[in-house]
Length: 315
Image (cartoon, rainbow, N blue to C red; front, side):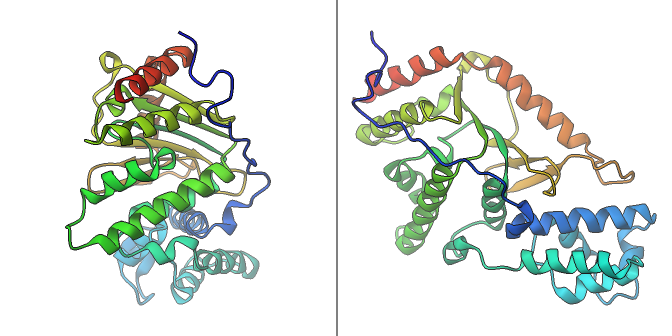
């Protein structure tokens, strides 16, 4: 059987504009993480616990913890207090204040925030700033590769019938995120999906057919390396997806993003500063799990055939 679309008549291949020369610090969530990593490195280089660091500063351990994890826009007064606490010279303090200001800049997805989990909005920013993305999705088609009909079906399951306005916001966010990703993709997006993702997760066969056709088209897109992990080769991971993000120089450290059913977490690579909570061990462990999953994935030809078989099942 000839490969679907081999003559290029059915769907045009996307020729995207690569991200080039973008400063990760100009991306608000990335700037918040860079700031957090620097504050944590400064604290640990002085041998201070979080409790000792916030003593006489006027804010709490939880505030410092959120700052160091880049979880919320930093307040200027808090960053300045820490800079003074760590005896930073004027130009170093100015650099931190600039990062804090960049982290507070408006983001395009702010109008979609109500129905969206906070951890996902942080990830959207990091996804846009990343030079390279490696991801494995165990349960559903990755958000940046979903069709609108498929996305709507997935999203509607999480809301009550009376919350249609939230559904529309969530669908709008996902489609805008997808458009931006495809318009300006990272240098390389290596995407693994389990064979389970090709199963009939949506009751309407036409929706699944359209999604599988779209997956096939995305597999032909320059810069996107899409592979399927056959059911018999799947490793039992305790999360719905795992993503490795790498950034250009000056950006956050490489990190693993783990997304579960109702929560998510970030595991940054160790920066060489001793005494961190995990000191990069969680990062390395999950990175190796992702590498192992890559090795178990089907080849490009085999992956295309698995997707083509799915198209035939739903057509």
